[in-house]
Length: 94
Length: 159
Image (tube, rainbow over the protein chains, first blue to last red):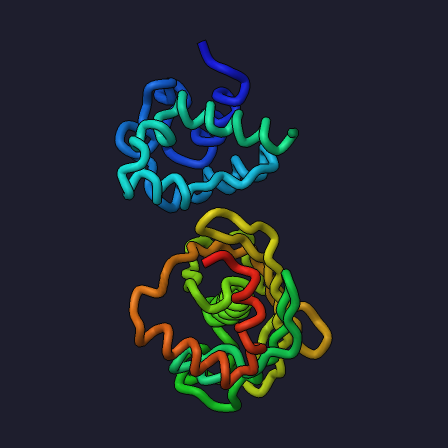
C-alpha cells in the first residue's frame, strides 16, 4: 500500500535517475538499494523541493545519522522518506 | 580577467539578498586565443560558463557569510548566443532561484555591448571549506573584487 506522496516521490526518482520505477518499493534504501549517486540525489531533492514547495532538510538528516541520533533507514528508506515528506508538507500547511 | 588563472570576476557592481551583478573585461591577449581560434579569437563557451559559475559562486558565498564554499555540480540549458572577443566588457547577472539544504540553484546571464551573449542554470553543492588555504584565497579574492563586508551577511546565517 503506497500513498500519493510515495508515488510522486518514486516518479521523481525514476525521472531523475536510471532507476526503474518498478524497483522503487517502500523498503528500498535510496542509496544502498537503488544505487542513486550523490548528484542524482541532489537533482531528486531539488525536484522534491519544487514539487511539494518544501525544503527537504538533507543536511540535518545526515548530521543526525552521522551523530548516531537516528538510523539512516529513518530518512533514506523509501517508505520512511515519503512519510518524512508528508510531515514536511503538513508542517508547511499548518 | 586572467583566463590562465581562472580569475573570471573583476569586480562586483551590486549585490543584494538574491542577486549579484559583476563586471569583467576580457583580456586583449591570452594564450587561450592562440588556439581558440587562430585568426578568429573568441572566448570559449566553457570559460563563459565558468564566468557565470564564479558570479553565482560569489553570490552564494556572500549569502553564506563566507562560511561554506559552493562547488559547481550541474549546468543546465547553457546557451551561447554570440561571439565574445578580446577586450569585451562583460556584465554578469546571477540570481539564486532555489535555496536548498546543502545546495543551491541559480540562473546567470552575460551581457556584452547591451546584448545577451550567454545564459544558463547552475547548481552548486555547498560544503565546509575543504582546505584553509582555499578559504584564505577566497577571502583575498573577495577583497580584490569588492565583496561587501561579509560580517553582516554572516549575522543572518545560523552557525
